[in-house]
Amino acid sequence: MGKRVAIIDARCNATIIEQLHNYVEEVFLFKSEGITYESISCHPDIFIYQDADKLIIAPNAPQELHDWLRQKGIVYIQGESRIGTTLQDSCYYNCVATKNRFFHREGFTDSAVFNHNQRKEFIQLPQSYTRCSMLPLTEETFITSDTGIHKALQKNGLTSFLFSPNEIQIAVHHNGFLGGTCGIADEKIFFLGNPLLHKDGERLYQFIEKSGLEIIPLCNEKLYDGGGIFFL
Image (cartoon, rainbow, N blue to C red):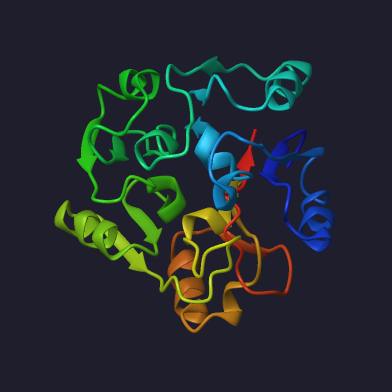
């Protein structure tokens, strides 16, 4: 995978971190304190928006992240919205974009992110934690653990696989989200855990493999929602 780096939840277990080092040059262990609520405090997808063209970071993301990105020479811009402790102000950057479409809940998007995507078709979703809940495999194909998102994607003529959130591990809460367990780079989809330990795992594997992606479980434990894996 060349000189890529990755950003993940600092609470990921040692096996995940060790295995990820086999594919990237460096792993940044993301964490924050006193900015948002505990379960998502170490989740990159709360503070980072990423698509093929742009990286946008919350202005109050931990200084360590800003310093590390600059040290690595990674180009990014700062968004306008500060992350906080409510639903409204904790999902500004938790959006998904493909080449031609932008997915989020209307009224919950940081202005810099929204303006960057304003020429794309906007797909309104009922779930403001969009990146937590879904991941595009291709322009037309998606995986999600949110029933509302699943229905909205299908309504818009897109193909969606619905994965039960039951037994997806997350700090503090009972169940996490599927989007927060994974990330894609170089035709590979990496998981924080092993999807085959879940009742929907075999069907998920079959669905993903049809999209031409290689599946890489980073440990042999139940899926962990760590706010996604961001490859840069």
